[in-house]
Image 1 (spheres, rainbow, N blue to C red):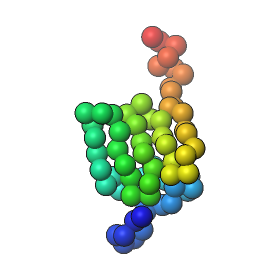
Image 2: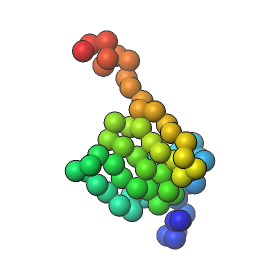
Image 3: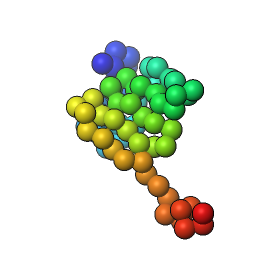
Image 4: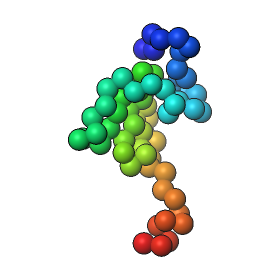
Length: 65
């Protein structure tokens, strides 16, 4: 999907979340990256192959709440 140079990391890369945002929808809480990954404001992700990456929660912040 990525057409700019240098190309963004693929959705299978460990740094896939560093790809360029091609469509942002902050009012809905998500953005589409050029590698096809959808990232959500809660840090969850939906990968192009349909796999779900759950939100990453900081346990220290949860303990303080």
